[in-house]
Amino acid sequence: MRLRTYEAKRTLLKHSKEFRDCSATKAISVNENLTKYRDRLAFICRQLAKNPQSSVVQTWTWDGVELGVIGPKFGVNEINNGFLRLRVTITVVISIIDTPGITITVVISILDTPGVTITVIVSTLDTQEVTITVKVSILNVQGVTITVVISTLDTLGVTIIVVIYILDTPGVTITVIVSILDTPEVTIIVKLSILIVQGVTITVVITTLDTLGEAQILDYQTQQHKLFPLLTEAYAYHFAGDAVQNSYLQMSKAIEAGDLQLLPVLHALSAGLKAFGTWGASVGIGVCQMACGGHGYSQASGFPKIYTRTTPTCTLDGENTVMMLQTTRYLMKCMKKMQSGEKLPDLVLYLSMDLSGNSSMSSDVDLPIVVTAYQHRAARLTKAATTAAQMLMNDGRSPTEAFNMASTQLVWAAKAHCHQYEVNVFVNTVTEAKVDNNTRAVLTTLCKLYAVNGILENLGEFLQDQYFTAEQVDILTDQLTTLLTAVRPDAVALVDAFDFHDELLDSCLGRYDGNVYHALYQFAKSSPLNEKD
Image 1: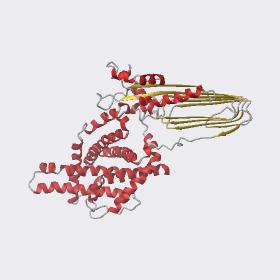
Image 2: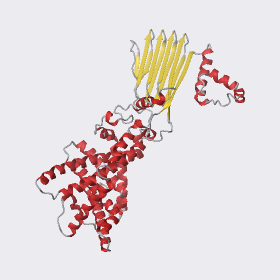
Image 3: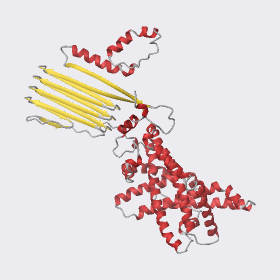
């Protein structure tokens, strides 16, 4: 039970023992925290209002609470998760008549409370040396209306200070009205707007959105490490898709002319990338959903729909492991051709590279050296998997049995092959793209982050033959931190560059206008369970 007034609470507490002893009312519980601070403030103000020496004439307080369920979620819908919306109206009315040398200070701080209306009215008449200070701090509040009305008549020596701090608060309406009549020597310090009166000295104080120093979640490195590599993957998949399509258009002409030599190359590439990309997308959606906290679990986030549309691609049009094994069959054939001295297609020419050397990577982390590292890894894993299958056949296993017993290693090799292809395409795109220098710099940073993060995520496969030294791994770790910081200023623009419309995303969290909390509230209100109290 929630009590709305101080008198009601005082009456209840006075008779609390009688309530506890009565069988009809002993189950009633009172949540004191919801009311005690408001009631205490109201009590003090009423006492001041009764004091003839006080400048407080009257006070009003009112609060409203709206409860409901947040609507359907990703799962576990048999458990209701609720929302609490506090609609707060704060009204302060102060009238000063013939009271010299008075100081009035009104300080209001609102944190994470949607639907707030604040009205401050101060009027002075026939008063000398008055200082009026109104300070309002708003943080993470949805739908705020602030009205400050200050009027002075025949008042000598008035200082008016209105300071409003706004941070992370969309949908704010601020009205500041100052009326001065027959009031000389007035100083007005106000943040936003003011009615200018002749003979008034005006100082305008402007406070930026970062005044309160609140950090955005995206500024935390752990959040960046979750999301920025996925952003680089999105660009890598995009560039790789364009490259495959261009290869298809070039190869299709040769195929139509009867030249089928390049058909296995295209089939192996498209099969492997289909699996590589859909696996990455499915995992990435889960990471993004959890990075949004509890909101990501709600259907309002859009993730449930995106997830159910994306994860089937891991099995439709070919189960991903089967797709990868088709790529490995082609890689095994290429290894045999290389061992017999035949020329390999350009796509797999790296398989013939010398695997005895080590990386020459320095602190610069040059892109060509990074590409060589990925090719070294793919070539080594392909050679190891092919050798394992061959040894099994040498031991008397049939080719089918040998392929099955080495299939796990072969899938590793196919993944490494797809990964090196995407890194290679990314580097070539950044190097050859006809863009301005600023755009190239941003894309180069993305490319490096994609490559460096990929090495660290699969570090064991790069260290197995001591290709990297411990010092080089330290360089890569330092580079990861540096690159995450470098991507941060352009992260939002890089996401918006894909130009996904709000209707396509269907997400309260990914809205272009950023009006997230209002959208979440409207989504929750639309739940059938909220149609009745």
